[in-house]
Image 1 (cartoon, rainbow, N blue to C red):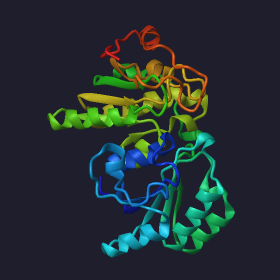
Image 2 (cartoon, one colour):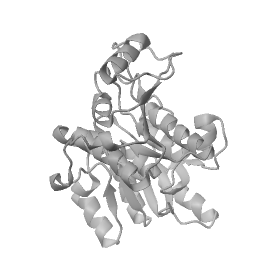
Image 3 (cartoon, rainbow, N blue to C red):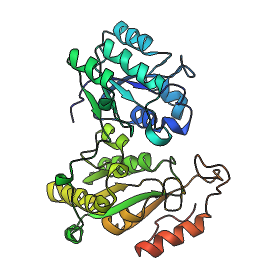
Length: 310
């Protein structure tokens, strides 16, 4: 994939928290954009890669969009996109995000957002972007119902080995692990495709993506089946890796059952953080024991969790 442009990732106040997981993914890997910098005043002056993984990435963190734009100019680069790198509870656009989008438009940037609230529903933003010939792209806007698929059973035709990467919680590293599996397979000459199921995987450039939590429930299974089947039909890869969402037992972000039921994986990788005691964002809700989570997944899927070391 040829990058669409030079991007600044907006993650004000959140880069050092799980709310910055979209920004984290874009710093670690994206084929869709050339990431120039991150905006987060709480982490300004640091390298995003060093802060995230202890590895220098050459992606500086600035205090605001003006600084990020000036920093790019010093390198002879012009930012073309602002990416909303925050995954907030409820996916709303607060005043800080709204102000950042106004700034980005004034600096001549298109804006891509994966939030539940749509930029194009805010008339002031939509009007200003149109006046400047810029695009506001709402990644989570669901497809028209005429484009949605219902489950048919064609998943049974897929001959690729299907691996689902599920988790014991949300924001625990499922997508990162899925990409690492893909990268490792390709480094060994094995053909493989990642099935993205969230806005971040799409922003990272996954060729086959759906946004699971924006779909009408009746079509979730059909969309999972269709995207897996489409990757197999188009590319016939040896391996298909399906990114998980939420977790099977998370009270606020339940996820995984439809992937098991409709994706019909041949094996499951379960992502777990041993030091995490409560579900992400829900104090007082202890994470179910790992053995119980493994049992539930294996019982529902009839397939093994491949690594039971925890």
